[in-house]
Image (cartoon, rainbow over all chains, first blue to last red; front, side):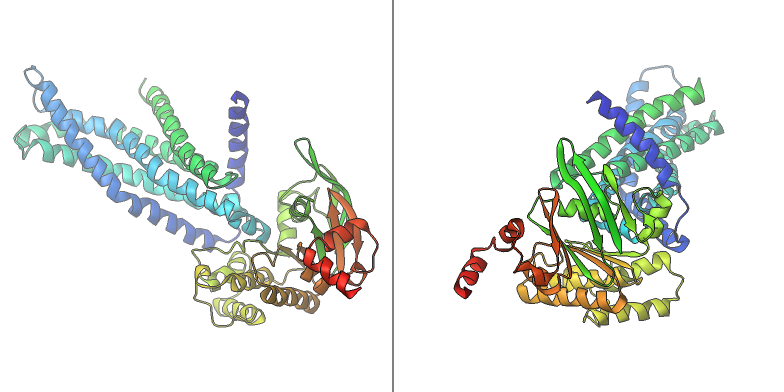
Length: 248
Length: 251
């Protein structure tokens, strides 16, 4: 069991080399990449929007509760919500959610193709399936997930504003002043670094689980679950490592 | 032609193929037959490079598949076409897109030339005019024929068919067999069919290899099947009580 982890890790690393091969036909890869970008970006926007707006709103309301009766200046709410959203909530929560939505979808799609012999059929045609099936997904994720994370940050801050200003928790100028205070552009860089790393993790782990699936529908379900669980664990681990590397 | 030499394949402790050597000839329909679990599918997968043998070699004319690199293997595969047992047609693509897929990937033809070739292939399998249907909208027999059309679209030198008649009625099976046989003759293809369908054996078996328990138990042509005294062959051919009764009544 323990040794299997090393086997999978080794296989995963060797497989990465297969993914980054020269495409057989650029236009086919281009079309497939656009399809993936649409699926990942447009397809995931509604759930990202919904989650971000509520997380922003809840963060603002919880901080209002925490700050009640303290000497902390009230405009800090905008500052805290902004930095928490940019540094942590937008990249991490968005990618954890995307691991569930996009990751399980990728694992199921590739696993289904494996079981229906579509991957074997492509191999026999001479297609490098690791490249053709995975590279467009990786490029699609690496382009669209940072965009989604950026959108999530903006929507999260908007959600915080909507939950705190119109409801009377804070004044408009208090929130905006906080939002404009102590801004460090490096935090945005950190957000994008996290978004890129998490996008790579969730796409490659989910694809690995789907691509190498064996057996029937039960195994496919298990692979899809593993794709989400392993992606989430690795995203949280990477989050900690990035925090250490970029802030300490 | 494809030549296999002393192929051995083991899964865990189970030895599935125990030293198979055979010559699959060009321009003929070569059949791999045998009971379920005799190693037919494993041999076919080794022939097309989806499995690697523990020892032995597979020669595509003068190219050794077993020692080839991934890029060499890809070059060999560009000369192959395959019809899968479950057809393996891409569900999200139309019939035209399915057949065009290998050309889109590997040929530099114009869109018009590709369409022309797709229509040629569809006509060859008597399915002209179904370009815009999806695989789910046509019958199992038609799906097999689309699978054949896709397999031959790049004019392969080697054609592999895994259980081409499974799930088909006897009449459609004969149509598929005759289609594969005539395509083989027209293009001088080395066709290898993995089957346990007795009609296929008697109709198109020009070069037959019978596997039994991992060994090559018998080889010959369809004309030799009924007269040969091989016990393993006899057991396999006359496994059906109906056939046994038919032979007894004929006697």
